[in-house]
Amino acid sequence: MPIRLCSSSETRAQLLREAGIAFIQESVEFDEESIAASSPKNFVYQATVGKYEANLKAYGFEDYPLLVADTVVTSQNQILRKAKCKDDARNILMTQSGNITSIITCLIYHAKDKKIVDISKTDYLFADFDADDLESYLESGRWRGKAGACMVEGFCKSYIKEVRGYENTAMGLSVEVLQRFM
Image 1 (cartoon, rainbow, N blue to C red):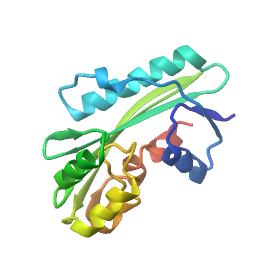
Image 2: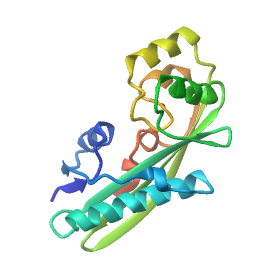
Image 3: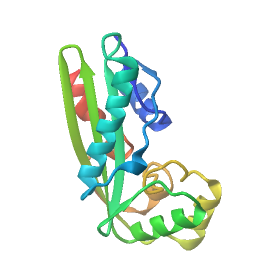
């Protein structure tokens, strides 16, 4: 039986396809701007629960198990949200340049016989970003809609000096955790 991926993220959909997990993709929007959190883990948990509750109300879990996920990026004690403009993206990325960046993903999987909640973290140590490379990435617009304007599978990949955790977690879905419970 397929699951319902309650996310518009093409990256999350691709991770499920690569893992061989059948799914349909449809989601109800949830406004994350209202969240006031004291820590990145608390923020990502609240965002995921908010999305879960909105999608549960819209779809239930009787027809298909629900899968909801959210990701937050943090560096230098700052939660790095989705950039609103190119200058915002530049500032967010410069916070990560040459520093440790933590990418925290929370998922909720709810089927008839089980419900799991997981929070996983992957840490990256990035080298300093090249200024011309950064400007090219900003001009491409690929940072839009990405937490922390970060693409560990794209722009940031060549700057990774060290990784602690699963790359899938950093890409927005802890597939390794999900597969254990399906």
